[in-house]
Length: 231
Image (cartoon, rainbow, N blue to C red; front, side, top):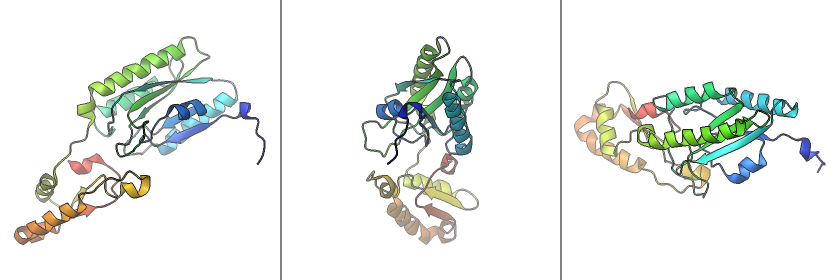
């Protein structure tokens, strides 16, 4: 054990947006920055952003203060399509303006079992810039209200097993059918169920009529995510 000058330490963390944002996390860290993209293609960019802001705080150039708003919902925000694409582009344009340092959207993780689960907006402002903390709170509330109003449009389209198989067999080439919940419980203790056995049973039943076509359908386990596979 070594003694650290805690008052001088800047604590920052990069987060998967499917985290559970708690008051303790916000209180204990100087900066929390989540990936903006889902699928997660911006981990490096967000990591560099975090390091830059932590360095700026160490040097006294910024003093981050957090504003958090709970949307009181859980929504998987797929940023490769609208309206989420536009929201991400807009929040990136807002960062660095009028004392706003960073904006993160916590998507939440619907299979999680914790009181902190849910979609939230986290905005950091520079307390050294006049009125910036108030702007951050207003911005967080505005973004949260927008997410709530768009919750149906943000949700990815979901099919029944029968619909997925029919759609897969109607497409040329190989089609992937994925159960997003399958085996997640092994990783996070969520105790979710999976439809893999049902999918395979229905494919087997269909094989008598369309054996060649059924060979083109792949049922994937441990799926982690591109919503385009559902289209």
